Structure formats: C-alpha cells, structure tokens
Image 1 (cartoon, rainbow over the protein chains, first blue to last red):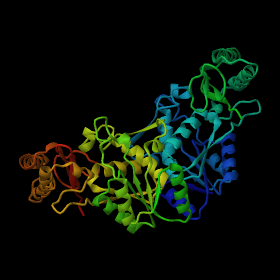
Image 2: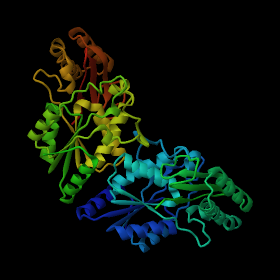
Image 3: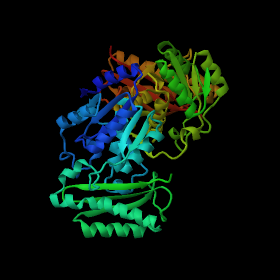
Image 4: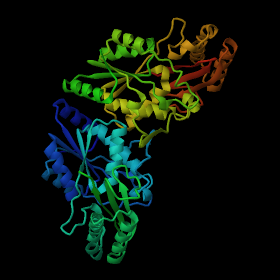
Amino acid sequence: MRVITTVSELKSAIKAEKAQHKTIGFVPTMGYLHEGHRALLKRARQENQMVVLSVFVNPIQFGPNEDFEAYPRDFEQDQKTASEEGVDIIFHPSVSEMYPHELSVGMTVNKRTDVLCGESRPGHFDGVATVLTKLFHLVQPDRAYFGKKDAQQVAVVDGLVNDFNFPLQIVPVDTVREQDGLAKSSRNVYLTEKERLEAPILYKSLLMAVEMIKSGEVNPERIIQEITDKIHTETSGQIDYVSILAYPNLEKIDVVEGNYIIALAVKFSKARLIDNVIIVEE
Amino acid sequence: MRVITTVSELKSAIKAEKAQHKTIGFVPTMGYLHEGHRALLKRARQENQMVVLSVFVNPIQFGPNEDFEAYPRDFEQDQKTASEEGVDIIFHPSVSEMYPHELSVGMTVNKRTDVLCGESRPGHFDGVATVLTKLFHLVQPDRAYFGKKDAQQVAVVDGLVNDFNFPLQIVPVDTVREQDGLAKSSRNVYLTEKERLEAPILYKSLLMAVEMIKSGEVNPERIIQEITDKIHTETSGQIDYVSILAYPNLEKIDVVEGNYIIALAVKFSKARLIDNVIIVEE
C-alpha cells in the first residue's frame, strides 16, 4: 500500500496503473474510517483490480459554523484500516495541495439540495461536487463507492455524474449499523453515554414508519408526526428534520407510494446524526 | 471517418480506442469549419494517434439576444473538411442529446471573465465551461486544441482544467489569417463587401500598437487611444472594447511590460469581430 500526498505523484501513479489497463475502484472519504467505510472498501476490492482511498477533510463543504476543525482525524489508524481492507493507494493531500489558489470556476448544485441536510447546510453540496470533480479527474476511477447513509449525497453525486457525463459508475452501498441499529458514523464518538443509549431510537422510528406504510398508511404528514413524537419522547435530541420524499429526485410527495426515502436528522449535544431508509419497488 | 450523433455510441467508441491505448487529440468546435479549425485539426493529427472533432452549436453559451439560431451551419461541408484533415470521429450531437434535462449542477466562471468579451456576454463562459466539461468527459482526450484568436476562452479553459485537475493538456494554436491579415472566423461571412475591405484594419491597428510599445510607449491608455482612433477613422465598425491586459490572468495593468495581450472587438453591421496579439517574453 502506497500513501500519496501530492497531486503530481498521484497523477504519475494513476497513469502507470492505467497503462496496465487496471480497473480502479475509488472510495472518497474524510477519514476516521469506521465499519461503514470498510463496507465500501470491501465492495471496491471485490469489483476492481485496484482500490484507491482518499482521506481528505474538505474545508469547502463545511459551513462557517460547522465542525471543520473539530472533525475527528486519525490518519495512523486509517492507514491500518486501509491496509487491512487491501487498499492499493491512499491519497491524503493537504488543503493547499487540493486548493493551491482561489478557484476560477465555481460549481453550484441547484437540484436535490433544498431538502433534508441541504436545507440547513447551504453551500455544503457545492463543496462536495467541487472536491469530487477534482478527485474523479485525479483518480479516474471506473467505479466510485458511496454509503446510502448519506442518501442525499448519493442523489446529488448521481446528478453530477449524469449531467456532466463523467466516465464512471456510482455504486451506492447499504448503511452499516451497530448491533442496536445505530448507523455507523464518525460523529458517533461525540455522543454522551446517555445519548448513545438513546440514539438507536432514530433507526427504530424509521422501521416503525415502514411498518405503518406496510399497514396501509399513505399520508406522509401522519407518518412524520409519529416519528417526531417517538424521537421527542424517547430521546433528548432536537429534531432537525423528518422527511418523506420521492427517490432519487428528492421531490415532495403527498401520497407515500412508488420509490421513496424516509430520512431524518437529529441534533444531540455535540453530534448531529442522520439516518434513512430507502424503499425501492422491485 | 465515423460520424457519431449519440452519447452512448461515442462512449462505446472511445472505450474501444482507449482499450488500444491510443492517444486522443480533441478539437471542440461549433462547426462551419474554416482555416483556423484546419490548423487545430492538423496540429491534433500530428500529435495524437486519434483525432476527435466535435461539431455542436452550444445553445447555453449564447445570450438571449445573440445569434444562436443564425449561427452558420454546414455539416456536409464540415464532414468534407474533417475527412481531408484526417479526423477519425466527428461527434455531432443534437441539443437534446447533450442536454436531455435541466442540469442539476451549474458552473460559474468567476475569474478572467469580467473583461474583454466576457463583459458584454454575461454567462457566456459558464456555458462554455459546462459544454467543455461534458465533452472532455465523453471524449477523454490527452490533448485539446484551441485557437489563440479566442484568447479569453483559452485563459478560461486553462483555469477550468487546472482548477478541476482534468487529466488532459490544453494546446493553444496561433490564429490563422487571410492574406490581408484578417483573422479567419465563421462570422466573416456576415461582413458586407465594404466591411470586408475595412476589416484588416483591426489587425493592422494591433500591429501598430506593438510597434508603439517597441518604440518605448508603456502607457496602455495612450496605446488604446491610438488603436481606437485608427479604427474609427478607417472603418465603419463600432468599437466594443480595446484592452491591454496582463496575460494569461487577464488582470488590468498600468504599465505595459512582461506578458500581455492587446485585444479588441468591433461590431460591423451584422458581425462582431474579435482579434488580439499576445506578447509573451521568451
């Protein structure tokens, strides 16, 4: 496994691999790797001859009041995880390597962003689209892997890749959960002991909603109310949003049917957690 | 030579060529090919194993009052020219093939655009950046060729490619001129007989400016005044701008020195012509 920190070294390495016709699987991350990332790496390892992992906490996708500085980092541990999962190259650039000067061209994500997390994080997906465009050009992957936990990110990246004809395939991978159902996340370490015990309620409330729909409920407002009540009653978290939207276009729906996503975000004292279930008709 | 009109067919063709490790030279155009385009195609032919030409009048780079509908088209003649210049693939998509639905992500060029043509064509370079991003992803060239006549376009594309780490090289090619000095352009056909006789004054005024600078003049305002006077006196055209700027960042300068561009745009009755000279210190 090779650790690369500069753009020029990465370019040379990718060029050499491409010359050997190797298929490249790419897992872009902000590091502090957990089981969710391992699932992406395993899938990339299965489906490609070469696996590239990027570890880069991207400043331009954080808002002014967000946790860029506080975002957890442990590159030593990340290298160990990557090695265990058979990664060939870790790309771990500095901020100045990725953004040596002010960008002359800006990207603005105009759709699928005014709902869910996008609503409370203006500009967030612009930063995501920008860094992924750069990374896709540098790594030139055949496939790029994203967790369904960030369902809105998958929807936005899907739009980006299709709109601009990137020559690669986006592969969404199922959310990995703790035994009690809590979705794995780098931010879970910020939960207090009490909050950690409450946090599985988020997923339980989503499963409850799925049961309601299976039992015939089609009114999104009533389902959202039930989820909201459960989280208010059984946790100390503050609800940021609970939404039921068409999937993958993330448009509002009046009747729950077809393909849809039930998604939520809840703020605990030092961590904002998100989770979702996506129901796609076979 | 193969004519391809769909994105899916182009993807398959490029994939097949890439599998054979062929280097790809790409010349993106809006068609109605003239000697200037031939120079780009010849250069691409010399430097690459395969040459792809795109012929696509890109609606999103035309403003509401610009000449999208009236822009000259002659695809039959373009095919003949392309064949003579040894083109392997012409990509000639419809508007709906390139833009099947509203884009979910927008690109905005924020630098190098508030001068020269950008000043009078708001949004123009956003459309250029968008279509080139799509075409670069579809064609996956090793080198892309652009005429220096559109010097601002070269500067903007250079920024786009560097900012977003596109894995390709931009090759600027010298402006091709008529015997009397007029820069070749698709729009020259719109000149009246009288205007066509006057039009070489544009280039002559640029050469005069270069002589003034060689003789010791360093004040951009005085040089611009001389160019303006000459064009007013000797042509019926209306000056859109005459500018002297640092090159390639296109920033304003108080003293003419180092690398710079002298550029102008002049409106005739039915054609707006541009020209420039770029002086780069050896």
